[in-house]
Image (cartoon, rainbow, N blue to C red; front, side):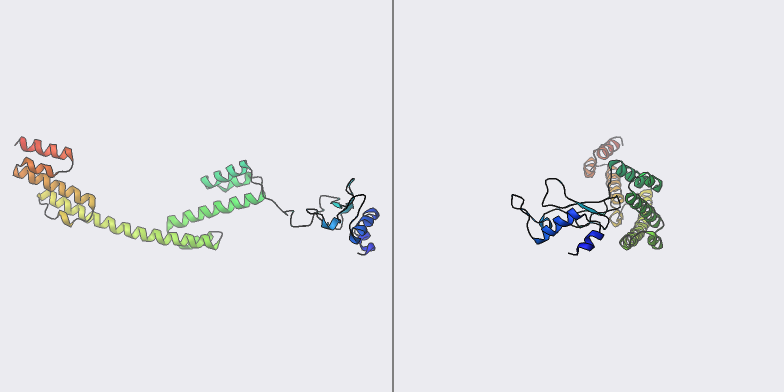
Length: 240
């Protein structure tokens, strides 16, 4: 290693002497030593403004201490940035999403978490608008391609569901009108043609009730599944 280069990097002569010894091999001050370059977990590089200091009792280990806050330790074991999400920040984040209000995000202390909060609120608002209007063009306002595709898929599903619901409502309206006509004429011969299960059940009950009362046959009241309907059927026949 070039001594002049090390000195120009700000390394003291004492540290240079020790580093030279470490490069030559293990240092043995009474007990077998270990070269500084082989010490596990000890960062061996620093920025050009760092000074290498030999701590007392550590004759074989070089510890790099930054001279200023701008000096950073080099090595994969030291993360360059950490996001600290406090409980308070997470509560604020949740509130922002629940209220669809990005102004709450500004109360979060961590800057990265603020950005994430605002993005999620904006995505949530954009998705709600797209689904409410069933407009897939509004999906382009979402922050990622995956979210945009998911938005478009939901809109297509909702459109399909809407069409099916409209068809179902149309059929129900027609069958309700059909039932009302049968009830008005006391002709329940077409009850079996009804596809709406609730309406069909009502029609069949009315048919059996009318049949029992018309024939004045109490036994026919037993066809009625509901006990209240059976009792009403029997009472009406007995009063005739």
